[in-house]
Length: 201
Image 1 (tube, rainbow, N blue to C red):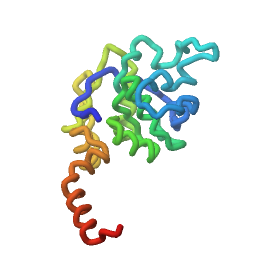
Image 2: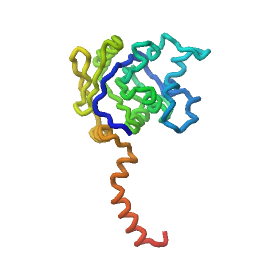
Image 3: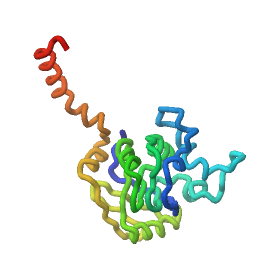
Image 4: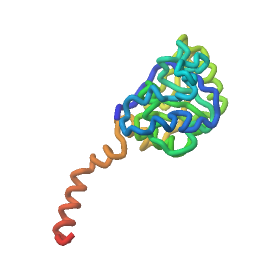
């Protein structure tokens, strides 16, 4: 997993509430277990028309936001069914930070396991960030995980809270498996003793 330290980039405004994981990555894209190639399916039912052409009204199809690295979204982002493909699709598209007032619990946890930083802010702060994002490529946001702050194009700063353990694992690029493997010597020692004590197992 890639380390997340400081991210600077264009933020795309998605002024929608209750965006569920099926909207983020529709079910027809769930046939793969690969983490790559899912960016094309991100918000597919919003990004594409029935004939496969791009919906020019959708924010990520607008020239200013095609290379967005940050998504500013409405309340309860990532609700709905459990699918790890949702953060995979965001990351494959190039978005590694989502900012909202609230998230679906499973989606929120899955983000940390895949190198995506979900940030919770107050409704007032979200409106400020929407205003910044509405300016497109003319304004970028800087997300500093170490300092736990979002810096706007005009110098404004929004602080955010994050669980210390999750912060540490993102900064170091560690998922749960990598955290566990750091204790491999202790695990091996325990297993060796267990075999001695219970050779019949």
